[in-house]
Amino acid sequence: MSNTIFPGSTLGIIGINRNGVAMIAAAKKAGFNVGVYVDRSQPDITKMADFTIDGAYNDKQKLTEFGEACDAIIYQTPNIDSTVIRFLGQYAAIPQGINGLEIVQDRLMERAFLDQININIAPYVTVIGLDDVYQSIDSIGYPALLKPIQRGIGEQSMMIKRQSDITRAADFIDTGTYLLESWIDHTAEYTLTAACANGEVEIFPLAQLEYNEDRQLISVASPAEVADDMLQEMHRIIKSVADSLQYTGVFSVNFYVTSTGTLYVKNIELGLTSIANVYDNTTNVDQYEQQLRASVGMPLHVIRQLQTTLLMIIRNYQSVAIRRQWLLKNNWKFRFFNSDTDTADPAGILGF
Image (cartoon, rainbow, N blue to C red; front, side):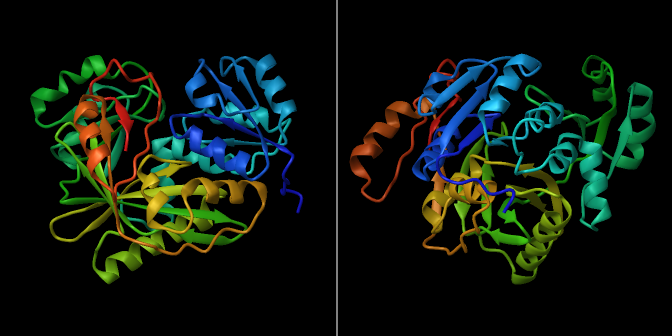
C-alpha cells in the first residue's frame, strides 16, 4: 500500500503533449489534484490543471518546487530525460519507475533488452563515423536506417538506400554513437498496447496502423485481424516485456510483419500514445484511466472489447472537409485538440 495515493492527493504530470488534456481530465474525475510541469507555456493543454510550473528541465529550483508540491509524478511520454525523473524522485513517488525509461531512451539498451528476452528485431550495428558505416553496410544490407542512439524530441533518422547515400551521412553524424539498422520491408504495421501493475498485465485489442508515403499516420483500426498464432506471439512478447521492464503503467510494442509473415518488433513505447486513442471507443476502459489506476495503486480494469473502431487522423488541411462530415455522420465521434501549436503546419494534427 506504500505506493497507493488516494483522492485529494496531488498527481504531477511531466512530459505532457496534446493527449495531456484527457490525462488531466481522468485524474480530476477521480478526485485528484493535478500539477503539470512544462518547459514552455501550453495553456490550451494545462488549463484544467490545479497548478502549472513553467521551467527548463535543468532548472533544479523549479523542479524541486514541483516535486515538493506532488505526492506522485508520472511522465506522460518518454521524452523527458531519465535524470530529470530521478531528480524528482527525491521529492515524490515515481510510480512508473525509471528503469524502463532508461532502456527505451537508449536504442542500444532497448535492443539489448529485446535480445535478452528472445524477441526478433532487425539486424543492427553501432557506428561512430562514416568509416564504420562503409565497413558495416554490407552486413546490414540496403536499405538501412541510421539513427542516433539516444531518443528524444527533434531527433532524426536517415535512410541509406545505396552506397552513394553514405557520403550524405557526413552531415548527419556529428558526435556520439549511432545505430545502423536494417530496414525491414514490411506489408503491415501493428501496435499492441497494455497496462501493467503489481504483476497484472491487461492487454488492449491489437491495432493496425496505416501511414502515407511521408510516414504520417492516417488511421488506426482495432481490433486488427491476424492469424491466431501471430496474435499469441504478440501477446507473449508484450507479457515478456511487461515482466522484465520494471515499469508500471501503459506501454505499447510496435511490430512489423513481412510478406512472408515474419514478425519483427520495431520498438517499445512507454506512456500514452495517439494510436491508443482508438480504445476510447473500442473497449470498456481507455488508456488514460488504466494509466491513472496503475499510477495510484488501484487494480487495473479487465479490458473487454465493445466494438470495432477505425480512428482517422484529422490534419489542418482537412479542416474544411471535416465540417461537412461533422454535420452528416451520426455514428462518428470527434475529438479536436483545440491547440494552436501546429496550426501553421498544414499537416499538423487537428484531432481525430
